[in-house]
Image 1 (cartoon, rainbow, N blue to C red):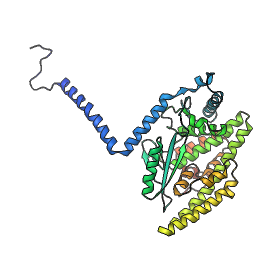
Image 2 (image 1 turned 90 degrees about the vertical axis):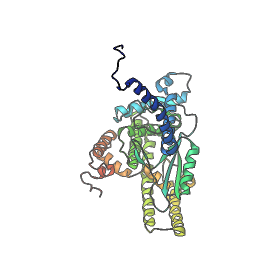
Image 3 (image 1 turned 120 degrees about the vertical axis):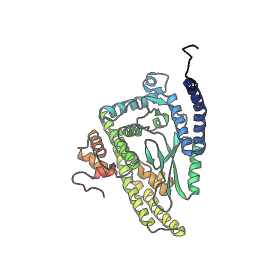
Image 4 (image 1 turned 60 degrees about the vertical axis):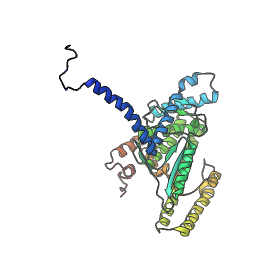
Length: 375
């Protein structure tokens, strides 16, 4: 018997075993994946989101090349150059983690990138939440397919939830991917474009898992205060003033929505049902609309109060609006304590948040010398 092929009687043929094992996995894994996709709506959603992200990444083109290409629309090249300048400022002056974010561009081919769904109970100001890998628990869900978003909204309405669907032209992968600049963001005016770029880069720099109101409010603060500093550094007093005015509007809306939330919470504490609940909601949302179309809305410097007259208003809307406007004046207090230096403020907030033992970012901001800790 040939020594090379000689085997002890009864010994396993490991090559054959391995081939059979791999062959079995080749069948079992696709079947398992298919089964998961059939029974799990979350798995199907994540797969769809991954496919859409891959499509965007596949279509991206280097911004530097587009700027140098004289055949590209002149206005687009101007906007792309502004984005690179804002990105460089965010890295060098604000010391944000920019990585390769916004070094490429994608023409989306439509006005709206995705629809974002928020929901809340009708009898309480309590958000409906979804849980995802990395980001944790969040009170909204984004859909690349409008029909899927509307189906999900109708499904929640059928369960007696308030719902709110809104468009979004940008999103962040928190630096895990090299996010491209999307055509849906480029169409914004120059101030809002720069604020959006810096806002998304702020997510790359500081993100606290499952604390969406803080994450979005912090990014809004960095976005508008950072845009103001950027335009001042370029001698653009007009856009600097517009960024400052927009930030004042955001703080005013924060105060308004906080008061509306307080009134709603107080009313819902009585455990209202049926007609009593509907009357109370109608009265409170009527008051809110009067404020938005009257003294609050007409005092805004950069928003058109007539938009508020047409906009929907329910519990889900209040929750969605507050996600981006939660304790903005507190963030501004830290800003003033750091001599109105946006880079120094970002660092100060990072240190406080990342060293807070219980991981609560707002507790970290309140728990500082001279300010009692939140209980």
